[in-house]
Length: 168
Image (cartoon, rainbow, N blue to C red; front, side, top):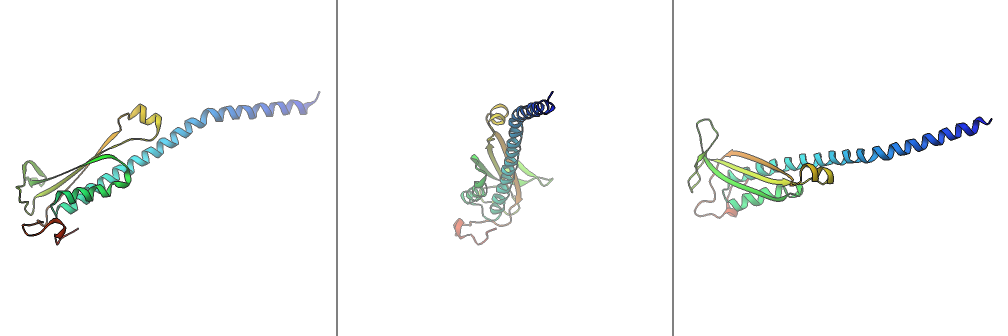
């Protein structure tokens, strides 16, 4: 009896078994890896949104031109590739505890010490097909808000927004 032939057949059988196991596990591993990539993109997107809201608020506290504030905020989030980001800017009076009094907006002439509230909302869509279609079919809506106190009112009656002497 030839022991060499018997050993060789067992080794070939084990190689085939390893190939089958690898082919069953590899797609699951690949899906988990791409899903982790999606989580990283979601964190990057949320971080971009919070940064955009903060940058918009920094401009709003020295230059109250809404078009300039919205443009600056949208430029900050351009790299995140979001679907139609929505920016809102409101100016509120300060309540007793230092938070914005949402029932009491600042008058048309925004005064120093009003609070500039810049809110940013956008929808993030995952790129992983299974995660995107099963769990987040309509995407995930992220919202970021930044609140800062107005330091300077501009434009006044003689200046346009681009001529405002104070820029962040």
